[in-house]
Image 1 (tube, rainbow, N blue to C red):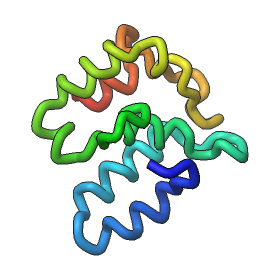
Image 2 (cartoon, one colour):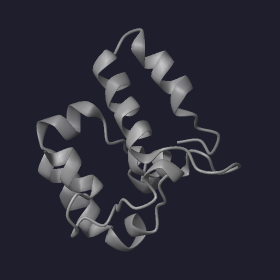
Image 3 (cartoon, rainbow, N blue to C red):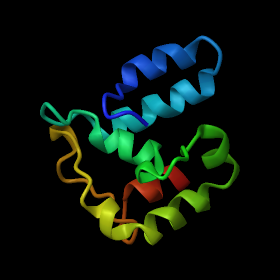
Image 4 (tube, one colour):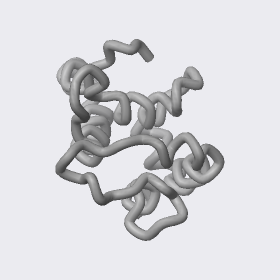
Length: 108
């Protein structure tokens, strides 16, 4: 996934033919929030692109087996814990072992 990834552009493009994916990306974008420039969407990009491993956490994949997203976050806990939230969620956590983490919210 390109470094210049912008979720709003991707959401707009997806909305024309894949509304569920557009809504999923909207959820991730809202849940993570925007960071200060220039790395505004680095957290959304990192989660959506599976930390850049060449895959994507698509809605189809996550909704089919939500536990897989949590398991991936546990497996990559060190990297995932370093991901930041935008200012509106600065007290939230991506640490999958903590209550109300991103993994728990997605799985629920």
